Length: 175
Image 1 (tube, rainbow, N blue to C red):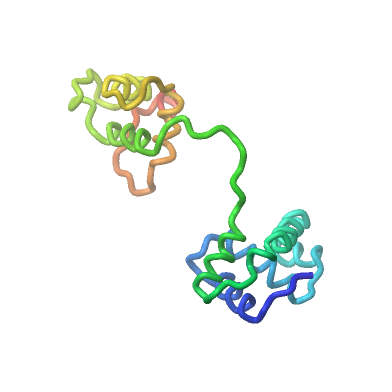
Image 2: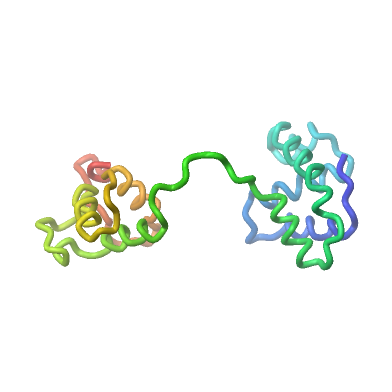
């Protein structure tokens, strides 16, 4: 079902066994390699513990990109091109409302003590952070819920102090 040159097979095999590669990338490389071996779509899906729909999607994507794969000059550009083919297509949807710089600035405020900004609290709440971000003109407006999402997504396993005050039920306050 999929025709792969020996060079493509070699590169896809290398991608499929990379330990530090994202799982989505290795799985997609394995899908193409399995189909190139003549394994059916259904058996490939079973073997790789994914859906038939997913296998068909990557089979179709491979066929759609046939013209773009022709005449690639050297192996590094072939590998990066194959990775581009295996990436998700951009999705429709609303563009981000806040820039990465704004998000980082808000998180940076949360990493500081509220007293440094003359706030009458010992721990940040999303509402206090909203007020401070607007006061510093980082944003014109933002909801406490958005601030809470930024902080939840930026928390790490190694963080020693919580960025937000905790409520009695141990969840983030006002999020």
